[in-house]
Each structure stands twice: as structure tokens, then as C-alpha cells.
Image (tube, rainbow, N blue to C red; front, side, top):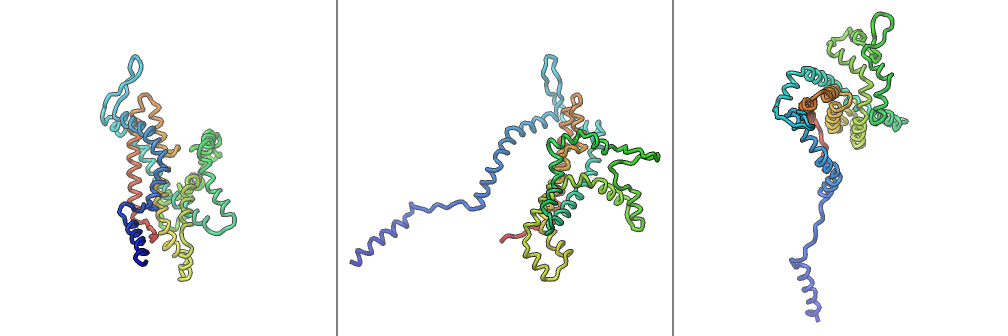
Length: 331
């Protein structure tokens, strides 16, 4: 009886250990997240390959050719090599002047936009009454400068008058710019007893007079900084408070290192946004060249030179800030 009872158990063990039946392993969480990410960007990839990639290829091709209009209609391309690029640098001197002037202005604007958005995000992250309303107020300029509202504002006569560099004749024989808040003389008088250089004074004056554009362009960066600040665990701040750290020490030792990845992201975003905005003087000059006769090939060469400059600046920003970024370990 005992032998008969144990026999089926042995047979069952042999069946379970049979090599033909293996348990299926499900995909890991990282693999499933990667698949979901590829599915999410799949429409963009399809549109980029089918629509944008041929346009990019044609733009590169035109930059190395000249277009000749045929008598019976149509056109043909004549290979000229690097002639369009050399003409953009050596012949059309306005392009180089505009490019250098635009780079100087953007180098001054980008740090101010990132620092101002970080400052506003830190304030709006505090527990204050009406915090959601203040966040919406700082993000409203981003909405107002896009789409139909931006087109309406571009045709605003008052806006053109306020942006006129000639300013207003107040009867004193001198013209004052309408958009100028402070002048260099005011700041020099303020810093008269300090060892402040002229370049710093001019930089401060340009920042104050350009505060409207800085606020308009810091909405997205402010939200990114807010998300980074809210991801910091409150337990870290509590432990700092228990150890007796001041608010200044907490900012430099905890807050700034923890949001350093967002500083890198916002810096790259600000560079791209500044170099591709509609009011960028280099982009406006390239559009002007494109509208001229046979200017499309020259503008293509200028565009690709400008693109390479932007890529180099982004690489420099990523390389410099990337060495100071702190990534928190999750394990």
C-alpha cells in the first residue's frame, strides 16, 4: 500500500522537472518603460523621417549650389561648392556683424533668464497665500507671446511706438527712450563709491531695461525649477534644521545641488529658445536675405553656419555645467 501511494508522487515530480516546459519570464520594468517611450515618440519619428528629413536634405543641397532659372520655365542647380559659405562670411559682412552682435546679447540674456527663473521658482515654492495664482501670473506671458495673440501684438501700433529707439522728445533737446527704465548715469551715481567697472554697470543697466523680455521668457524654466524643487524630500530640510543649518547654508548645500540637473536642462532650453525665437536678429536677417533675388541658396548657407554655432554653444554649455551637476542616487 505504501509503495503504491508513493508512485504517483514520483511521476508528478518527473513531469514537473521535464525540460520541455519552461516558465515564461516577463519583461522588466525598465524594458517596458523603454517600449512605452518609443511608442510615445513614434508619431514624431515618422513625421521627421517623412516630412522634415527631405527638407533638411534639400536645404543642405541648395547651400552648395546656385539656382539658375531656365528660359522655358523651371530651374537647374549648378554646383559651386563652398562659394555660398565664403560669400556669407567675406562678401556679406552684415551677416558676421549681426551674428556677433546677437551672440553677445544672448550670452548676457541667458544667465539672467536662468537665474531669474530660479529665483522666482524658489519664492513660489514657499508656503504663501495665493501661491497658485502667482504661478499662473508668471506663466501668462508665455501664453501671450505665442500663436494668434503674438501676431496681434506684433501689429500693435503702441507696441511699435514703445519699442522705438528714437524715444520721445520732451522739449529739453534730448530724446529719452520710451522703454528705458534707468540710464547708465543713474547706475554710475549709485555705484559711485564702489569699485565697479564700466562693463558691469552697462550689464546691470541692460538687465533692468530688458526686464520685460526676461520675465516673458522665464515661464517654462520657472515650471521646470518648481518641479525640481518639489521633488526634494522635506526630510532633508528637516534634518538640516535639526543640525542648526541656516537658510543660506541650506540653499548652497542642499537646494542648489539638488536642482543642478534642472539648471543644465533650463540652460540648454534657454539657448535653443533664444537662438530660434522670432525676434532673434540673426534669424530676422537670414529671412531678409531669403526674400532677396537668388538669396535662398545664400540664406541656406547662413542657416547651416548659424546651426553649427548653436550646436557648439550647446555643447559648451552642456560640457561646462555637466561637470557640476549632482545626480541623486536612488538605490
